[in-house]
Image 1 (cartoon, one colour):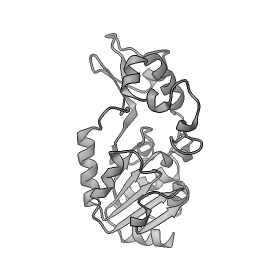
Image 2 (tube, rainbow, N blue to C red; image 1 turned 90 degrees about the vertical axis):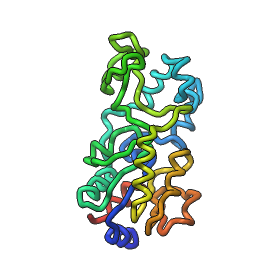
Image 3 (cartoon, rainbow, N blue to C red; image 1 turned 45 degrees about the horizontal axis):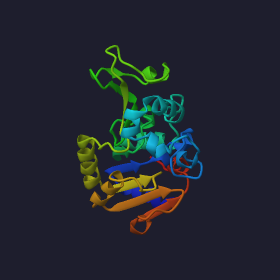
Image 4 (spheres, helix red, strand yellow; image 1 turned 180 degrees about the horizontal axis):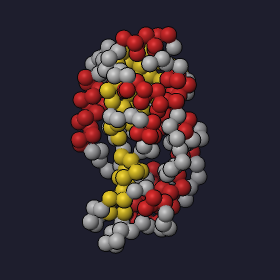
Length: 236
């Protein structure tokens, strides 16, 4: 912790890259841990349900799973989200790049949040492109429909869909300009997002995860603990 505090004290342009593990302390399940979604029993594998093909061919089944397992409107930011927002407010952190779709970084007060996989708070009609809040998905049964009869699709990146090119470019730019890159709560197994970290040319690479990753040996510091617990101990 002393080493992590020293790195943060010396840094003026920190970028944080986070995954599902950042939100587990807020009660949102991850995907690949022992208690994650990929280890549960469903009629279809979660990877199949969360694919573009399945969304188009089985929308009723998709939205049933999506409402039950992907929407957590009552979830609140945890210590990790709050400390990252505080680091940004203090002028230490320039961007949060997240693979999460839960909007908790914004709830915590972070301003510069690059959402690689979209957000559950944005939903659009596939026919007329009208915008809808999350409540439009929550407060209906079956397939949510626009007034024009088009299907309302969550603005989240499904399997088989590409990432937003503007978000990719901003993320790569932020990482390449950072003097410190902190990676937390991610197994670094989801590409192309995990590949972005190779653009980092700065001074300090820090990894905070409960388990080891393939990148640990390249890091200046690897901390194995809950990310909320670790960041909560940092002084801004």
